[in-house]
Amino acid sequence: MLNIILFGAPGCGKGTQAARLAEHYDLYHISTGEVIRSEIARGTELGRSMEGYISRGELAPDSIVVEMVRDYMRTHADKGCIFDGFPRTTAQAEIFDKMLAEINSEVDAMIFMDVPEEELVKRILLRGKDSGRKDDASEDVIRNRIEVYRQQTAIVADHYTKQGKYSEINGLGTMDEVFERLCNVIDQKR
Image (cartoon, rainbow, N blue to C red; front, side, top):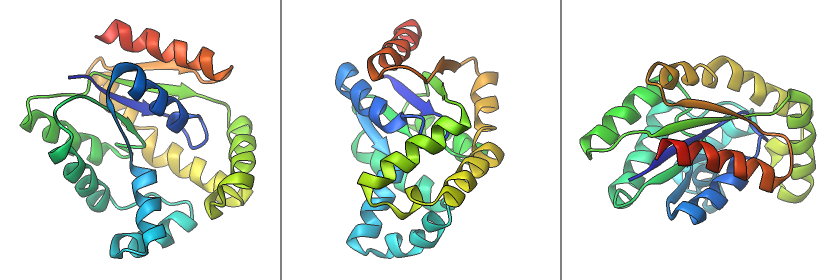
């Protein structure tokens, strides 16, 4: 079983690459952001509680996100996963490690996709023209999301660095170039 965390600021290409990697390595792909947006679109209780956080570019509370992932893992633990957007805090990473240990599994690699801030903003604004996502349409909200990422999420890399599971790739280039870099890291970890 292979468990990979794709890591990087909003707009770095995690979702696109995670879907490709999931297909290539026959893994499940879990995007906490997609799950949350789906809940919002369906008007569920979870969605309503999350909508305010998302519209301000803030992170979802650890307790809600961890429970979403726990529920997912209960039915998708038979093969590995690509985690896109989780864990986002050190507390989530610590809980996640324990959850995986309960099913005799672990994180194999955390791969950071490095993309400069101005490129991130440009990509998200461009995506916002097609996605209809409110959090992709405002430069102020986008820059807040990147700042929240720096303050609360980037430190998760330290957690996996201490475990010898952290790798970094250049997130610039064509989709195929970035995909090849990701595969090179994963193939070394297997």
